[in-house]
Amino acid sequence: MTGRYRIDQPCFEALIVAGAEVECLHEGCLWLEGPLWLEESRQLLFSDVPNDRVFRWSPGGGVAAVSQGGFQNGRTRDRHGRVIVCEQGPRRLVAVEPDGARTVLATHHAGGRLNSPNDVVEAVDGSLWFTDPDYGTLSDYEGHRAPSEQAACHVFRLAPGATEPQAMVGTMVKPNGLAFTPDGRWLYVADSGASHVPGTPAEIRRFRLGGDAGIADDGVFATLDCGLPDGIAVDERGNVWSSAGDGVHCFAPDGGLLGKILLECATSNLCFGGPSNDQLFMTTAKRLLALRVAVGGSRTAVAVP
Ligand code: MG
Image (cartoon, rainbow, N blue to C red; front, side):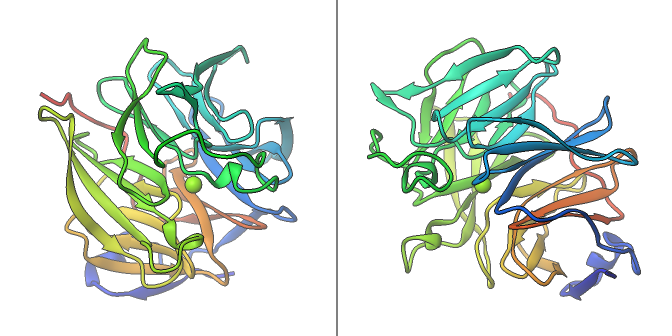
């Protein structure tokens, strides 16, 4: 189908490709998540969380099952070439080497098991920041039902070489997707609390890195007017693209809504990628979609002083 857009600011037109087709790359799933484009091998990893399956898609190669196990959700690539995976089932953060070898990075904080790591990004200093809402322990649908052993649903920072993550944010209801600004100085975190707690946020908060506490809450960056923010991604110009109830919402670095990609369903997560870094891959409940865009994903970062 042809991409449909809502233009809220004229500059949004420079980010999209008029007439580009929304491609359905895969369908027939229960709840897709965790899209990650791997540049060298030119393939996209993604998960069907409730079915506990991981797939890869490649241009011309279609979709193939990779593995199962762990109820894998969000993932990212670190500077060592490892794929860092949030496993909701065993409630841990895992690194997968290029040869497939796996290393468990984090399982506990303050003596308790993590809730169910949901999404992860790497900071410019090599630390891994991940969210730990309780979606994987609320039922057996996308994990294993269990009581929480944490005082809150945290945003954690795992320093290079550390085994226990440090709680950086403990005030969000259900912290979910997260992404850094291109310069690495600011962190966006989606709060999808409204999924289970009426009256709580469907918003993206922004945090400034640095200072004695390591992070400072800059407040609400954007509130969604349709659905929930789950996964988010930042483009090379610093715009923030968020999953939403009616497709994808795109926000300027000042939080203003630039426009929307309108789909016939909600999205759960998204990432930039493709051989020319000009595709936006979007996961929905049942389908993996792709749309050519006129901006690439953020790739660069500078050291935070
Ligand atoms: Mg998520």
